[in-house]
Length: 166
Image (cartoon, rainbow, N blue to C red; front, side):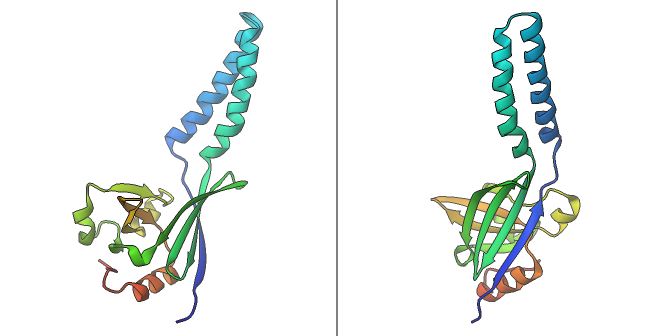
C-alpha cells in the first residue's frame, strides 16, 4: 500500500462573537486610558494591561485550520492570524466508528456526543462537511471536517465498512 500525505488549509469565517470581542476590548482599552487621564492615574496601568491582553486576544480571533493527513492519521493544527501555530488534535481514523457526510442517517445515533467543529463555518463548507465519530480520551466525540477528495478516497480505502457516502 502506498503512503499518502495531503494537507489542506481551512480559513474560519469570523463570527459576530469574534467581531464583538475585538471591538469590545479595543473600546475598553481606550476607556481605561481616558479614565486614567481624566479620573485617576491608576487607570493608566489598567490601560497598559489591557494593551497586553489585546495583543494576546485579538490575533486569536482570526483562525485557520490545517489538516495534515498521513496514512489514515489526521492531524489538525490551529493557525492564529497566519503567524502562530498551535497543535490541535490527532485522530487515527482506523479507530473511527463512523465516517459520513454531515446530516447522514448513519450519524443519527450520535446526537448526544460532544461535537468538535474544524470547518470554516461558511454555507458552502457546511454542504461539503464530513463527520467521524471517535472515542478519544475516554470520551466519544463527533469531529466535523472539510476533507479533500484525495483524503476521502483514502479514508474509504482504509475503512470501507465504516465509510458511508449518504
